[in-house]
Length: 225
Ligand SMILES: [Mg+2]
Image (cartoon, rainbow, N blue to C red; front, side, top):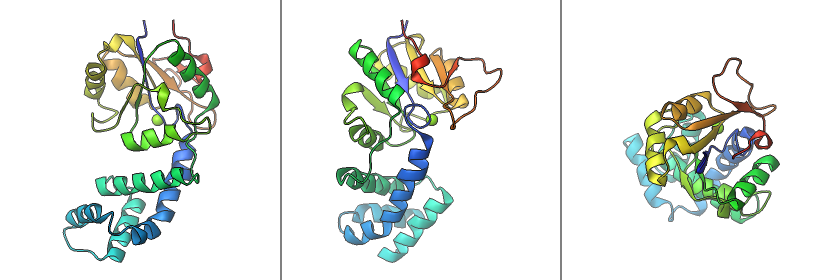
């Protein structure tokens, strides 16, 4: 029996290309001007950049460093914080709209109406998750979700993360349905006893032959009883 749903975002509720081709390039393009306009407000974040680099940086030096980190795909907290602030502004200005697939929107709404609590688990920060779902092509969808988890709870490929989420939401793993396009995440969740379904959306991910768990191309294929 499914008492709660836990869903990934990228490749599951939303297209991978939205994050890769829209969100991240938007933040990179806006970063220099955003820092120059908000140097005072982001002072503390820039101190974190200096701490990581181990030396004092001018504003332009910090901009160069942050752009280099983006190119290196460095997972640094101050960079994540700045990207979050830039996206927040972009959503507020209406320049960004969080992408959600229609089948995801319909099914999540149906489950919510049936009283099944839905949680999000994504590597994007909780703040970025809420921003995305607050400003989607279907309007504000945050009322559909009972809670959000990011990598603060642990790595998505680590089985203990799923145990912790189960404890945090107060539902046994066996009664949680986890949805993700990542085979490693699916295996980690299944290893602690969660029910799992892997997403292989057309044009985004391939079905894996011989994969030991159910795979779907859309939320329409999922029935919770
Ligand atoms: Mg994913």
